[in-house]
Length: 192
Image (cartoon, rainbow, N blue to C red; front, side):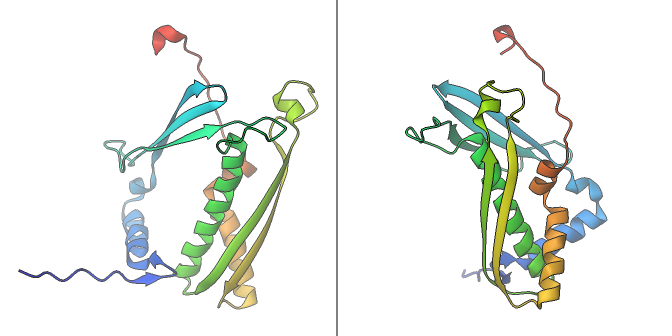
């Protein structure tokens, strides 16, 4: 028996039907929108860590996908022992990735073809804060600058409105711009 493969309608390389189905499903059942993200970080040696990221559905009943695992590292200020992106670099890349995906999906939703989209992100950090050398130096970024270049069939005014919307709905930009409550519990080795 020969079966024909289902045709997937791609627009901007996005499975648009699946995107709309997801929106409709969440509108019908808002509980589907809630997710729990988990990360396990284990020190390996030196300045290297192993990270596993888990994602669960709104009911936290089962994992949606297999954990994603990758290495993360730190490098010296002299940039001579680079083996992996460090945590602040991953945050900067995560911001760029989130803005790009938000733009493409919402451009698709509006019927705009995106031919090219690129972001250049730059952030300044003063390592004296991280190293505990200056209480005046913030340990995190002092500023993030971003330049977006887009080639799209949207009229200029629609493109500007889309970019404004993307900035409002980007989860990573929201995390960076707005304080998020963080609770920290220290457990000794007897609790591992």
